[in-house]
Image 1: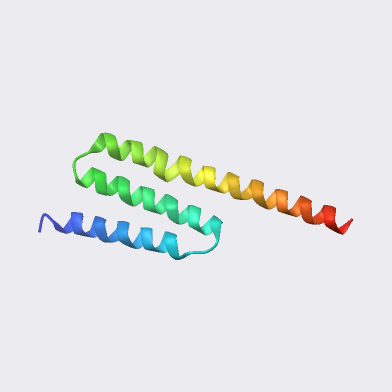
Image 2 (image 1 turned 180 degrees about the vertical axis):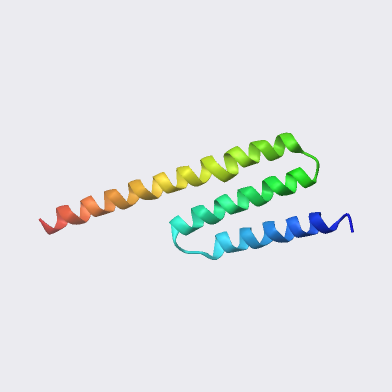
Length: 88
């Protein structure tokens, strides 16, 4: 019975990782990546590694998805400006 939370954490990590890979839209991928980071942080907490869980929470749930979103935004802006230049 004590292994049930750990098993649920592993299933959540596997489901979030699979969903992140299968989604095609980069914006949705970044949100799922954030969910994956949160699931990993919970898993590390269950495995009694609170320092790793805090690091994962900061980097995996916040910073990495934010960097992905900012990169997607910049690429989309650049593509829009290039398509406008072609039409002029």
